[in-house]
Image (cartoon, rainbow, N blue to C red; front, side):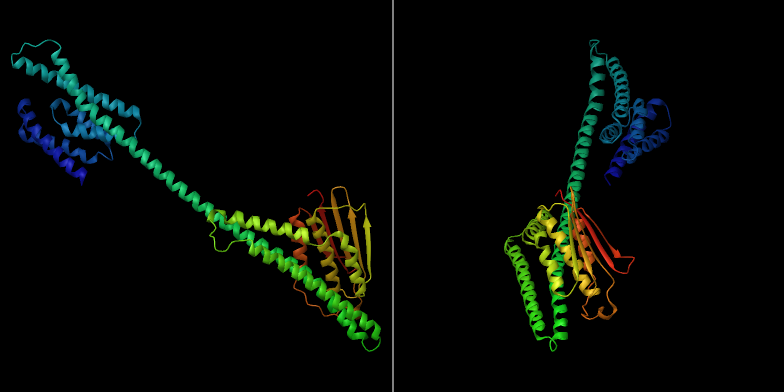
Length: 412
């Protein structure tokens, strides 16, 4: 609406000036009026083609028309995104045309009025008039264009910052979810290792107790005592784990809100602290003989071979090695009852290696214990070893047994 209004005013102005130009030039009046209307109406295109508007204003300057057309055209041109050299060239053309027309008109007026004025007056009037017609709209347009570009840049910067904050919040939520998932998997692995091994041995001893209760009461009493001991050990380990979880819950203030950007870091720190607590309070390789002895008491033939000089490793390394052997022996109890097993532990310069291999189970005792399996033992062992940068391999042997191998770097 603004452009149309300006174009209408410019067309009327140019039509009035065209009427005067037609009289002075000896042209038909309708031709001058129509020419002025068309030339002034070009201002409606100032936003799309500002160069064309300025060129039209320069072209009709000798006819002494287009005052509003020139001012608005130069302002729009200077405020546009065109290169400065184009703006300067067109402004110079407008300045030169206005100055020439102003010089001629001032000279004619001075000569027609019979005034005797100094030679400096006509150039002074021409230069002053051309500067007044050119400089203000150009300077104002440059200022408005620069301010507009600055506001657009600030708006784009604010939008960019808002998008970055949104991405940071999404990444923080993803890190928090990842930390929660890692903590759930860690707890699931620990619960599986603690419960599965102890309960599996309890089931094996219970089956043996049922078989010899009437034939050999002394052995039945011994098996019953072993079942009780293992049950108490399982309860003790469960209480320790639940105590760690409750301590972790009480350490986090529930009433205070946590900033969204810090959720991922807080959850990751909590997971790291939980992992450190796990490594500090978990079993170690010094308890490996006791672990093998429990399987022997359950009736399994187990051989333990240790190679290299024993030394102390980081708590998480020792616990992972212990859990791998523990879960492998538990799987032998579950899936190969009565089979002979061999446990190998090798202390090397920069790593510790372990292998648990069992022979095929006797056909008569393959399903005596009837132990269920959730299928998570091998997955848990692989996750534990991979978390420390180690390598885990498991699979059947050529003889029909099963082998579990793991290598863990000792430099942590």
